[in-house]
Amino acid sequence: MMLPQPLLYDGTYFTSAAFSLFSPLAVLYTSVTHMLQVANIWKAGKQLMGKQFELPARRAHETAKLPLAIITGSNTGIGFELALNFVLSGYNVILACRSRDKGEEAAKTINTRAQCGRQQEPVGEAVFVTPCDLSSFQTIHSFVDEVRRCHLYNGCLNVLVNNAGIGYNGISEDGLDLCFQSNFVGHYLLTRLLLPDLKKARNYVAYPEIFEAGRIVNLSSVMHHFASPLPLSKEEWKNQCIEIARHVKPENRFTYSHSKVAAILFTVQLNKLYLDSNIHAISVNPGAVNSDIWRHINPTLFKYIVGPVFRLLYLTTAQASSSVFAAATSLRCSNLTYFQPYWLPKSISSTPFPVFEMLGPFVGSLATAPRLPQGDDSTKSAENLWMACEEVLHAKNVRIT
Image (cartoon, rainbow, N blue to C red; front, side):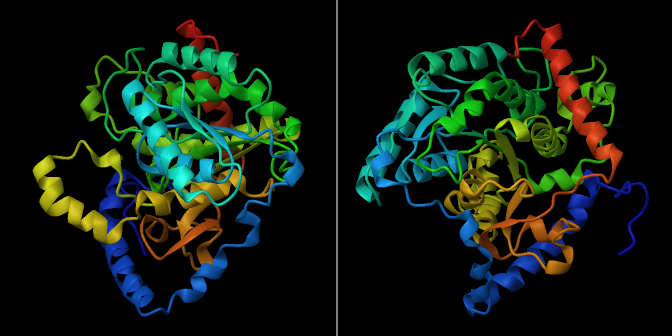
């Protein structure tokens, strides 16, 4: 298929205009495959979920000390379902949420449901400690300090899931692009602060196959395919994504796609720097999800048009959480760096084409390849993104270690 240049494709990434072109193809593809699934023709697709994504049985004599996970945005949507899965699987989970009321209510609901649906003894516990707003560097620091004071005094952090995100723009209280800070820079800071605790994951031996390394899961999106042009230098990352230029209105910026490719490049850089130091990072496209991220759509439009379409074609939050849970609990393997939830033809599993990741037959989780530039450009962009965030935080007197 020939695409106009450079309107839709710059040689690596598609532009936002290409998303409108591919959307009808994805809807048609999903409609056909869903009918085939109903006819049970896609039954074999379930075999794509290998045993490497299953959580090993906990050793009976090592159950006193439960592994610990922190999940951002865990009072609703994918984060809530993920926290419930972790608790049912024997993890203690700290809910990192903006709202105290919503966080405490989510913890109460998760613990009640976990006790009713427990599959093994002991189940873990979900707790809310203090608010964590990814658009406020001050609350991120307060959250980490309080978590260490209350919960990490005798152990380690096994899993960090950077899940929270928004799909609209504005200016954060720190004066940065609201979308990019909430989706990425806030997670960058949270991760940097928690790296010492993640390095202690080897202290937990009940699951030695998994927790020989601390696990970081960064949520990306199919929209990472549409991040053209890809910033390469520190200045490009700052100007295009992080900082608000005075002559650019916030509502005219579209940094969501770049925040999602940033999550993948962050994974690349984390593994480059820390894979040999007891850290393993994986990025995940959870799929097209009917979740609270769409809460800012006009209520009438959502009720009568958008909502019914989403319920028909999109994944539930429980389905979407499966690929994230797989990334968090799969056996450590350095070449597993990107998961997504749809069936993919083998011919494109290593050469991504966005239509097959936008919608399609749900298979739970599938390790595949993200869209990244080949060669030095990918490494250069990942390194410069890391340094751009570091310089912006230093300029705002924000401590990152």
